[in-house]
Image (tube, one colour):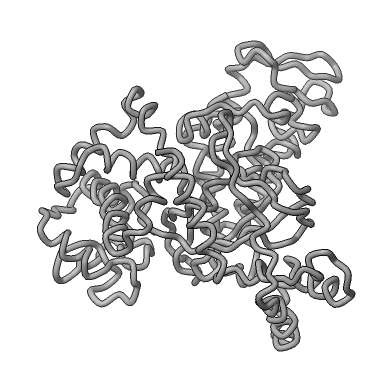
Length: 455
């Protein structure tokens, strides 16, 4: 069975070749023997792509240079990533050749896009947040922006399936049930339409056994299985696959675009690292992954399953709750977080020192400069208070965020991750016009974890 799953993932990786023009580079360009390659790689950098998107005066020039990247012909060098398997890491991606910083690794279109499993009302067709006076689909009653929303996510097949259910959506709990149900419903409909993807989804990590022992999602899986007339184990696997692997995506790139969850089997094979060697973003609904540093051949290709600006405790809580593992990387085991001091607090006794998190989570925090200590409870109250301030201010209040940043810098220190995230939110709020889709995908997500903050 494991060999069949591995083969399904290998075939899926190969199937992405036509959609990744960078995989078709010729052998000479792979070896870096020509000046033309160096010039093209310079324009294929992140800044080169920004020139294409935001510099209309050079659009034609940049488009012509970037278009040359797809002219490799039949002598392609293939994907820069390959699939490996180990007893410790399971299935994961490694670099199949030396990768330079800024190089694009791959592009992938989501297999399935669903609403987030929350009680928030979102249009099922485009995922835009809905106003209180939202209208339902004329055929099934599901929430839509308006009965003829041009979004493509609410398909005819989905409408027919929901029409047979009692969609009494007058409470937030019923809305959440609908959002939860759409994850397996949309996945099953995609697999029915494209049977070759069944092995790919079956091969994805779902932590079903561990989730069952912990009781995670079992009630929802049983309820959804009954409503859809499907096997409970199948529904549990799909729900676990999304919780373990899904990426947050802004489906519409217009300002205020709706956020959902996307299932991307190749991207999900990147292992977690608190200091990842890749970055990713969505453009026109397609995930783009690039190297942020040189990645030697044979090195794991990694992605962070949490925002990298979060402090160690916040990352640990998120990973334990959603991914069911504990990270023990060098950053997590270093109280200073590799010298970044993202979790350290400004010492109010000496004004110049930093209170560093103790190895024992129940112990007091100690300033490394003057030796002053502060109890765990006081530290937690201080950070929770800062989190509450951010929530009250809101992500688009430039003046309020500016005041919050100044206050956090005095109370928490300029290195603390709450200060950094508030600064990030201030930057996004100050952009005029904002980068399409960026504010909601990163600004909102960056602040949402404060509700579950724990030391």
